[in-house]
Image 1 (tube, rainbow, N blue to C red):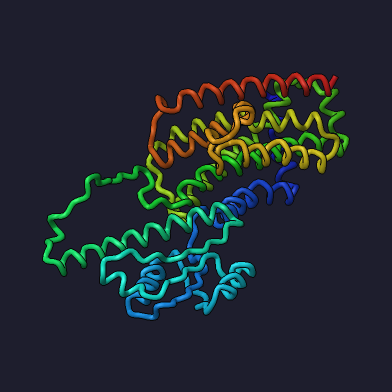
Image 2 (tube, helix red, strand yellow):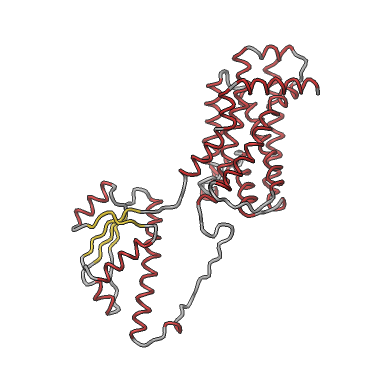
Length: 377
């Protein structure tokens, strides 16, 4: 125990004396969470809209106003011909254009269908799909209002009319469908995976560059003591960062916390052991701090961002890619974070993720200790 305490004390002194490491440990995680939390969003608002109104009647102006009453659309131009619409779409000045035909008001009063042409920029397929869904929803609401007005003019009581099938939606956990509630808990796992792995890997590589690794070679410490002594200070710091990031997500982004904080911290400790041990393993493959940084980014950032279910659903991936996702530890931690923070679930709902992370932690600690022993010998 005295050897382990001495090694931990040495590591703490080195951390305090290195301002770059201190900045990476305490500033980088919060900065990344705020940056990604603000920048990454699937919400599409203030879509640039061009309008070509060939009817120029109160009804056509009312229809345009219905589109712009919500936050989804913003009229940026009133076109006068097809060429102008093409120019606006080609230049990116407008994402969508609508063409209201002549006789629009006349057809509405006669209860006749009036086709409105909609041109959408499909170069961004995600935005185009969301834009069309917004337009369909607004047009459906507008058409229903006009249909009830026509029934009222004919003397039919609207209250007695009902659709054959009615949907009563109930959205659990995120009723407002706010993208921050989905992204921010996943970001906590992403940020902690990258920052903890980088810190641990660079700390051991730094020993090599400074020549102090030889002192560890001739000292009586064991390989397990070396791994634990290197991991423990960063484990405590990472634990504090988890608390900080959860607080930031609640205060800055308004993410509700519905679960048990004690359970979240316990499972975070399990994940941090895996990430820190993986950093020790990567340090045995790198020969410089720059190389360790690059290796950590390649093995943590890209897989964690693309293959963890952070943005892209794993169920939608090809089967070969889905197989690879099983060896990405942050995949399981993101499920834990979203389950506890958003849904308030307990251990029974997270048992597969807990057992998998425990297996990852034991495996990484074992292989890291073995690699360190070989390097020291």
